[in-house]
Structures are given as C-alpha cells and as structure tokens.
Length: 340
Length: 244
Image (cartoon, rainbow over the protein chains, first blue to last red):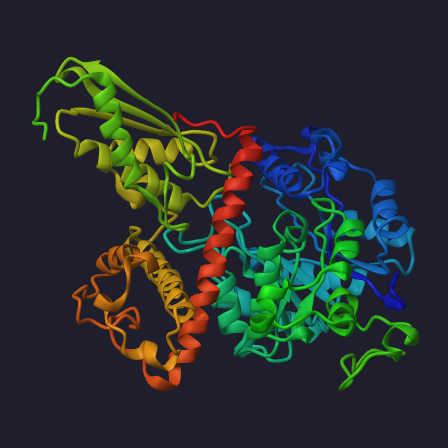
C-alpha cells in the first residue's frame, strides 16, 4: 500500500520475475545475450541508485525480491510471469516451478502464472493441465518470440495456439499475457505485430488478453486493436520507467492509451528485476500530464492512478482490495468484481 | 561528378561513402543509420581490381543483441547497395557486429543470397512487404507532423481535407512528406491532396478525425522507439562513439 496526500493506493505489480540469468545457467551465447539485453534495459532507464552490477542482476536472491517488492516497493500483490527460454538457459530462465517455490514461501504475497507453447502439441496440453492443477493458475504468460529448436517463434493464430486457448478456457485460466519479441515464424514478418491478438480476442471473448508493454514497439497497432476489442488490456511494463528519463514521452504514451482504451484496461508493472516498483510507484503517484498537453490528453486523477496501480489487475485476478482504498472514489463502480 | 576508375583522395571517397550511408535508413525508425550512430567504422582501402581507395568497408552496430533480424538484414543489404553504386568503388564489405544473427546476415548479404537464402526454412518470403508496412507508418507519422504544423498555423481540422501539397510550407516538413510519398508511390504534384491514405485516396470526411488521431499515435510510437533505441545503443557501447 502506498499513502500520499490522504489517498491510499493498493499496488498490484502485475509483471515480475525471479530469474536465473547468470553465467552458470546460460546454455549458450544467446542466454548471455538475453541477460545482457535485459541488463542494458535496466541500466538505461533506472535511476543510478537503483543500478545493480551485472553479477547481481543475473542472479539476485529471493530475499532481494521480497525486500524490493514488499519491504521497500509498496507492493500488495505481485504476479509472476514466467519466461522459460529453455533453449537459452540450462534450467530455464524463469519457470513456473521456480516462481512457485517462492510463492509457497510467502503465502498471500504472490500469484504465479503458468505458460504454454503451442509447438509442444498434445503433450503440452497435458502439461498445461498439470500446471493448472498444481498451481491453481488464473493466467498464463506467452512469449511468442521464444526459440524452440529450429523454430524462432509462433503466432497466436497458429492452429495449435487455438487448441491451447480452448484448453485455458476449460481450465478457468482467464488471463492471457502476451509478450512479443524480435523473432517469429516466418522471419520475414514483423515479429512485434499484434494483429494476431486481435483475432484471438475476437475468437475468445471470455478470455482477457493483456498485451505486455502495451505492444511497444508497436504502440499504434496495440491502440488500434484495443479500441475495438473490449477484452484486450495493456500491461505497462517497460513503459513505466520512462516516467523518470523521458516524462514527456511517458505522458504521451499514457495519453494515447487513455484516449484509445480507457483507464480500466491498463495495469501497472515493474518488470522486476529490470526495474523496481518503489521509485515507479512514487513517481507515478506524483506524476501529472504536463500543462501544455492537458488540453489534448486531460489529467491523471487519483482515481485513475488507483485503477492503474492496482484495481484493474485486482479485478482480473479476483484480488481482495481493502474498502478504504475505494471508499473515496468517484463515479461508476470501477472494481465491480472486487470483493471488499 | 566522378567516373569509374577516377582517382579520388581517400578523404573524398570516405566522404562520399558517408553520404551514401546517410541515405540508408533504419526501416523501422525511419531515420538514417548515420544519425542513429549505427555506423561504427567506415574505411577505404586499395583493391587489385580498382586500384587505390576503390574498396569501402563498413562496420555496423545495433542497440541490442536481439534487434529484429529482418530489419537488421535490410540495413546491411541497403548499406551494401548504396556503397556499390558509388563510382569507382569495386569492392564493398559491410559487416554487422554484436548481433545474434550477424553471421547469417553478413554471409547472406555478401553473397546476394537474399533474405530467404540467408535464413532457409525460417522465412516464407523476401522483405518487400515488411519494408512497405513501415513506409506506410513513416508516411503517417510525417502526415501528423505536417498537419500539426498547419493546425498550429491556424488551419481548421475540417479545412485540412482540402489542403494541397503546394500549400504546405517547407517549414512544415514538406520535403519529408514528399519523400515518404515517393517511397509509397503516392502522387507528389502541387495540386495533389495532402490528407490521403496509404493508397493515395482522399480520406472520407467521417474518417478524417480518426485517421489524423491514428497518425498521431504512429508518430508518438515511432519517435519513442527511436529515442529508446538511441538510449540503448549508448548504454550498450558506453559512449556516443561514431566515426564522426
């Protein structure tokens, strides 16, 4: 919970990791490159006092994670989004099991999501059932650029993707987090294109599709489909840290998102350990659209910030929110399914 | 004007090569690779076939190890094509470095294998459609810049539908718009309408506001990506190094 100026902000960090990206787990130069890539994101957009050494960044501890999220970071609930990358890392980068072990050590603090890969065929469907039963999954994270042998990725519109999404519906896994990356099959297509999200969002109206980092670097395509598909959401991982280094750009992105979507379909995320929630939450609550842009983009009210920081994700994941947080809110019930 | 075989001072050759590389754009960011500091080194060398300073070699770098391989391929191939057109240049070496697919891309471009030949089994076609998709985006972003400028000059949004290219002042980005229209094969005459879609058709009245609004989103996206890439590049290489 974050308190500022008489307001209480319930914080759901809806995209966090507990990875092992260090040299001992790297399978090849791709693993080394992947960790290095994340580290450059971290160094480029973190305030200097939050920048770690590459060594720590590769292999931080469970204690670091819990401390940075809950002791320092105001987070009430954090959602693990696994990224397997078993072609890059010996034990995987960040698997459901690795995250799940942390969840069990800290009851009530975390939600663990699963993952599937449509290229795993029938066997993968059974594995998804097993994961769902073991961890009580309400969500899965998909990385469409994941390499698997000769394949450099997949699309959500591939026939097997539909089979897996049908299975998610059967298993009560409602939240499908989609993370696009630089590769896909076929390689001549734009791997970041989110058009396939449009198709599956229409085909599966009972599922929620949360597009991570709001489709960046294809913000415009994301906005275009999200405005037409009510079950498409925008995850703010990667967008948040611009609040410090490029606040005017941050304002434009948030302004565009609020124009094309609305305040009920955006979810806060730090992408820990790339960035830390503490400074992101503090800066976001203090943030305002610059005056010269307000005629176009409006302003961010405390209610909008509450929704983005926690209430929207709480609605997706049936997370209980203390009544005090919503008591002072105006307008129509923004957290309809939240039990308070 | 130089002709093939003419002796050139290596400084001049280097300058011409640099200018040629300045015509090569990152297709995704719509900016010259020289401005983006993607050119790490440019050198001229002697060749047996062409004599002194008849070879040009270039080292390219990108913001991340995992930058999309299709765009990386286009930049390497475009750089090679641009340098090969220089008079008196008989040998061109373009090498992408520090990238997961550098080996495939460098070998494929050097042997004119095309994208399908460079990534057999991983692609279904060459990159023309990808390039065109991003030319459309670049056109839209530019359209927003121009329209925004006109609105700031006092034009009403409704009146923009009738603006002709000749009415766009150079200060509003006229040249940039014309270049992007040429890329797409759209008409560039003074009497042609400014506010047209990807196919050069006038945007219908009821779609005008939404089209302009979308053009704005495209521009925000493009400019944001460009700044992020510049930041990542400088973080990755710890400098603002470049050959100039």
